Image 1: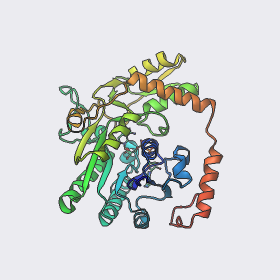
Image 2: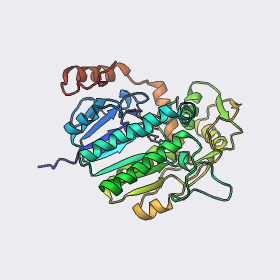
Image 3: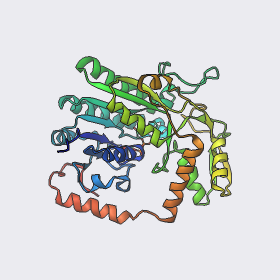
Image 4: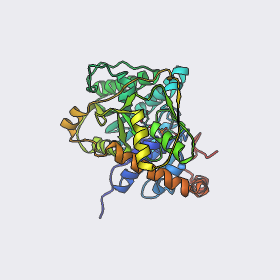
Length: 351
Ligand SMILES: NC(=O)c1ccc[n+]([C@@H]2O[C@H](COP(=O)([O-])OP(=O)(O)OC[C@H]3O[C@@H](n4cnc5c(N)ncnc54)[C@H](O)[C@@H]3O)[C@@H](O)[C@H]2O)c1
């Protein structure tokens, strides 16, 4: 007889990183419950087991701030929680910091309260190294995980603040948690409207014959990490006994200008580059050292930028040639939500 694995709750499971994580968890036989308000995520990203509510999986269209969240915990009784839901728009946080706090701090605390009440064993949080450390000084190759934080945006402060709440929950209630400070993650399914996803924006522009818009001179650098590597570390965070903050990155700086060169050589599609002025809240350089993460967990990234961009290009090309059948996912979603009585929660219906 096969032993049922522990239930895992993933917030933001319909988003870019979350949906890749859910695919991996489902493939490894975990029953997974997804909580997502679908504000930037999509049912098209979701694993069929989640959409069809099979293999112990389920989907709750719900905001993490919702007071009904406790009912999801009571029904699903998750052993582990991944918290990836939130807005990721750094510039939006500059324009509307209160809204940023509401989603990324208050939403997280609502989740944490329920995790404590239901005695969840571990919370794994998608934090952001790029946003927390701020601009990389010239005398540093990469930020170590214990470098003093210096966020350049309210988004960075919110991420840091929620890490602190997790520390508090550990000290006060012994809740185990892992905050993964990701660098810039890229790959298939990344939302194009998010300004941080420069590789996704460029690959899409390429196949749609639009110019590639570079803010500033293009010499700004980022530490671009392919999504599969990010998911490897998310998975590892469950399987080994660790607690605390870890950088998850490549430790390499790649300029935006270099990204356009790789796109040019990998795609053979001609494109035009247009320059626009720098954006408020953007840092010039960002790079994180993962050496402590490797030492403690054994994790290291496997995909170099050229290979990651090739994979992203291949996926974007396929999407362009055979766009996904949106109606079938939505039909399936509607049929489930129409017949399942357990999804009566406020905000859970497809609208
Ligand atoms: N993409 C990156 O480079 C990167 C880097 C560092 C950290 N992160 C963090 O990783 C997480 C996932 O990022 P992503 O790139 O997959 O973004 P995404 O926008 O694709 O995913 C976020 C998901 O959360 C959902 N969501 C948003 N607000 C919600 C709310 N109030 N209640 C319930 N669901 C909500 C969205 O619908 C979406 O499915 C985020 O927390 C982000 O801050 C991402």
